[in-house]
Image (spheres, helix red, strand yellow):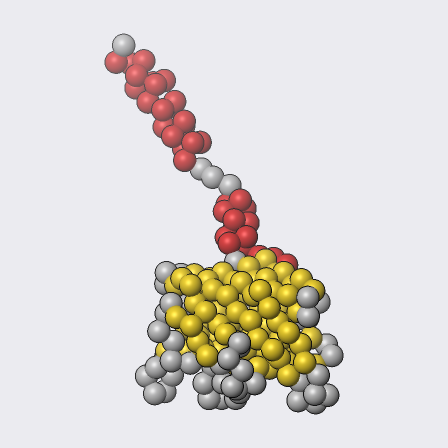
Length: 167
């Protein structure tokens, strides 16, 4: 009986454990891609970016003054993008948007025809962080973008996102 266990049963149990313990890494990668997304309405038309359908990047960094800023960039395959910077980031909070990309918080929508950035003082321009667990940031946003070249406007509404922080 002891010979049977050493010869057949032990290797069989080992092989079974190895087969059960292995998983398909492609399924895991696809699940990670599906966890990241950004959606919004641009003048009523849907914008949707998820996983491999575009480029999603978000980083948290310490500035030269010691404060924390967050920079998010999401771009579709066709070239549309939404970017924002949150200055003096403190986690879950509502952030009011300034008018300069170099001072304060801002958000912009960009496509081949131009770019539309928020204008300081519009109380409806908002980025709200709902959750930051150290790996992912999720939230919502809306703003009215202004194009300084042709003076056109775009309403970006119903924005939602969940993105993985780049380290």
